[in-house]
Image (cartoon, rainbow, N blue to C red; front, side, top):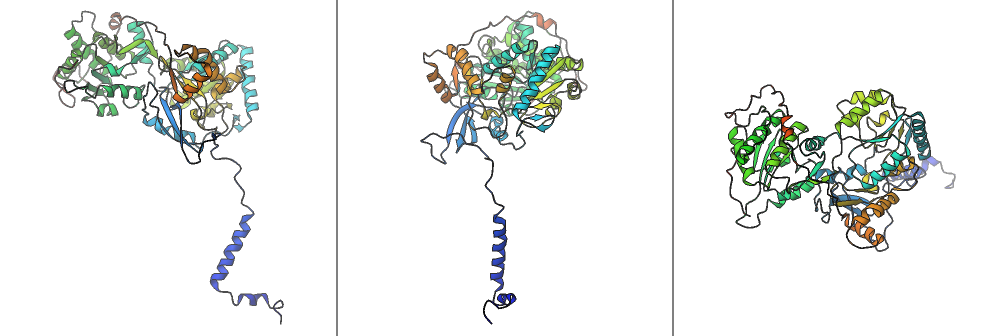
Length: 562
């Protein structure tokens, strides 16, 4: 019998078990090869590399930290088109190379797989053309019917954003932008409106303070502008000579914070005792400095008189170089802080009202008025940018119910949240590291934010969306360049052509400009007469010299170097 006529089963007789398993595995592998295809999408699109760029070698790009409105400068480490690390920009005049933990972690949001991949209309994926048509039609209908258009956003200290929002307001008369921040600093501005006639957030120069007392203000951790304050605070923690002493820092707080852990003297304090503690501290400071004006009503506190007297001695010994910071979201308590700072002459150099900060623009009353307008059916279109009031506002349930009476809610959220669930149209914004932007949160400094990676998902810059809906075509890059050519370039001192100025600013990340002074205001003692002491909380007795709380007695005042 020939080899060809042999029974096929006989062909396996001489096949060893190992060889059989190898052939079986190879057959399965061959069967699966037909299903393998190259991926259709790029996981991380790369920017166009320059001719001298080398694969695997990282480059650093100056941009802006996206974590909060403080406007710190950042350097993005990009390798093969992929941002992999954020660090502080040492050339930035505000943060001076520092970057907080939130800034370090903000790069993770860029790669969040939960980000929207496209616009949504009625909960279904849609093209940008359809989304723009839906929003444009709703805006035109609101203008025709006389219903209101409201833009709800957080603090957005950006000259380009103000220009775009101005065009939007001109296109839709009666529209208004409302600033809402879940953590508000509005009490500081309201208190200065009562004491100095200027309802603004001042600029604090901690590098000029030799004695510092903070009450529930974690300025090294998360309060307002932690990198700016950290640099200023640290400047006085390094004596210039053997005859010079470090600055002194006391912290009154209701929980242990990063700032309290680094203080020279820390006093645990209930939130209900803030008013009473500052009222007594102010009376002690006023008594040592000869204050003859009105005195505020007393409140309850368990901090002993001896501790507060020692703290007052330290502040008075450094008058004109002493500062009290208060983080309470209570205008009455902030008025007391302003009074103490006035007696210490802190408004001469340390606290600057003439060049206020734009880092926190939120007003708690803004959302309350919006909810009332929506409940009355007066709002035709609501645009929500970067905020989630359906989750983080104290009246979130009322907001959700009132939003149901708005004809068209538009969300520009990057990922699904409670507020975007209420929206008829979702037009996802880009991550700040993907988009052009700018910031003038600090008087005299304008920062630039340039993209360090091509958009990873199907979003579009909020600046571009607002401009399109206002009838102005153009990408975010063109909008930012136009604003800088019109406003920023004329305000900088160096005589250069715009293109040279633009290229140098992109490399540096920020530019110094002339800041217009708006007046300091004068302290009004009448603000103290209008204060009302809060009701004493249960378990907190009125002020008592026998009640002692703290980590030990405050150190005695010491003579300091010049």
